[in-house]
Length: 176
Length: 205
Image (cartoon, rainbow over all chains, first blue to last red; front, side, top):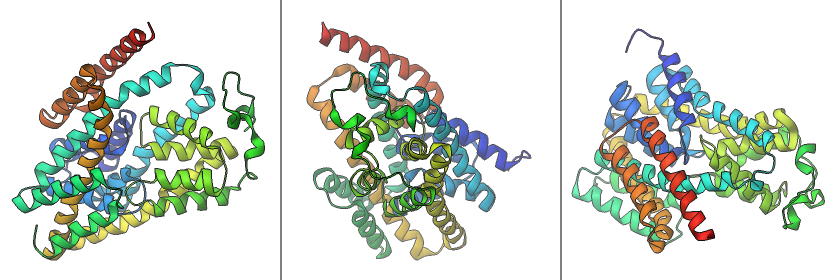
């Protein structure tokens, strides 16, 4: 760890990241991975993938993977600092914008920009999937499990939680 | 809030400007509890539960109002559902309502996540836990691929080359080349907005 205060590093990193997080939490995963694993070495690749899995399995907004990153860096204060830094600035921004345009549908620019962001969010989420898969799918069995879950979730409306739990059971049994 | 109950000028939907469709305004504690409940119910995404609670269960918003509020929050950066809690709470109860909803949404799961982080830090190396987490990770990646697939389907049906090139470009820049997000977005957002604008004018013409 560098000599600078880790809490401050967390706050500045995630506050800045949140302002660029178009398309929600899943789209921000590659940037979180780049910063936490490649730039700051806060976590290993494996720890990051575990954090993603824990965040998916737990209740609440998926963005709370930042709580786990924050804890890994600086314990409980780090967990809270990272969560607030990721969530509060954009929430306040949303509050201000909603007061400015209380009827956003009147202008066509928001709709246009929103439509323009769709391909970017999809590209970002696909990148998330690739980065996580490179760390997690290291065996044929693991690859098969990912592919099967992807296929089932694409064509059916089964609750994703069951698929996560089945994955956990297969892992527990030592199959993947 | 008074600013939001002003009559809509250009909206044909009757539902939007009718405060009579609403239940009585909730108190701060009710807001906190409602968001805490939907947050804790929301495994793998809170939006579905938020919609059910706000529109169907409590009738705090009409479906149109909910869509409009969500569209605003989706359009802005940051975690959408977190933005929604702040905007929604403040529309009902001012900034205090926004803070109540925001805290309700985030506090309980953050505490749970912190406990899980402590457990992981202590027992993350235990072989059984490592194996189980590895299995969950594989499934979680599969779920993410499914979301991407579902979002891609309408784009593939339209075979919109420009849009598909943008998806591929962002995917390669971030996923393969691992470029910083800011740099990629500074190029990709103007490109995509420009392309969308030109395409819409073509369709309109």
